[in-house]
Image 1 (cartoon, one colour):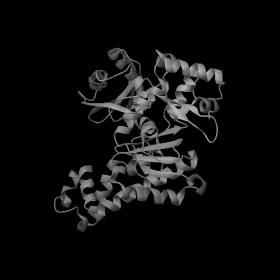
Image 2 (cartoon, rainbow, N blue to C red):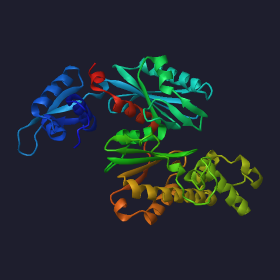
Image 3 (cartoon, rainbow, N blue to C red):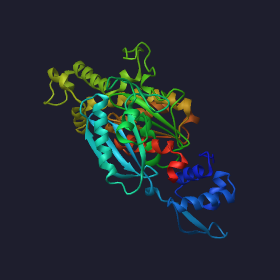
Image 4 (cartoon, rainbow, N blue to C red):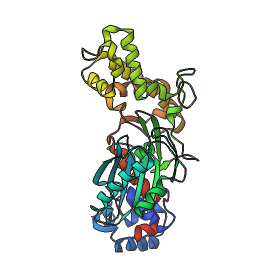
Length: 396
């Protein structure tokens, strides 16, 4: 077990977040710290209410040991993500467990409009807090710099070099950190996802209007040297395929995003007029096709739509097979509007991954749909802030 923190208190805090019920003996074994150091740190954390003794445990035939339990609600944080409509936020405990939720529509897609929405969410949640609120983590669509302070580029919003954390800190008087919302969602799935088996090397892929990934390694977010790790939407899956806005050709984004799926269905219907999606969507109305209509058609078992969804899963599976061979995750979680189609999509993904990925990379690994939905990025943003905490802040 690696030592997570730089001090005995920090080490202990990280271990208790990961293992919320443990003993002093187990903490010594996991941390590599001395009994005296662990005893001192435990006493200090108990003084401020972050640890409580909750009973005894008798391992095998040895002497019974006192069970220590983290009291996660004794300090709280706020996690938020910017969505197409505005801001979705959560008041969370020290393990990113949700306490209360808030949502606000934005006042225009300028940075200021989203700041106003988030400020309103934070004010609502702070009023409900039962313990000190330490700060805020936010997830945004787009590239965030390595320091977690600035949105370098958000194509979705048309933002460039927006100092989003400075803007929020000036309004709220609280420390703020930011990341791409798919990266935040990876942390959300790690901490709060209902997953069985190993999750120590987790990859989360969001597939919707855009496609991007987040990676968690040993409980920590991996962002790369400049913060751009995870741009799986711009990996090539079809050389000389359609041109992508990034300038490349055949990116996963132009083959498997919402826009790509809608176009695939239109092409299939135009190629076979008998495949029109019911009486309500004649051939001359294909321009009005929406994701909502595709979901309705899929629920009704429309063969054209189901085939297109399966084909989209195949393109995603092709990209995932390469990713799996490279980073060998223990779990891949799929979220967003495209995985929301469920089994027809997941089947296409899994079959293509099995066809292309190496056996040893697949051994013990699973590909699943998100159990958190749109809350993954919000809860993960809370976890993001928790990962930045120093011991002095926690003990204050």
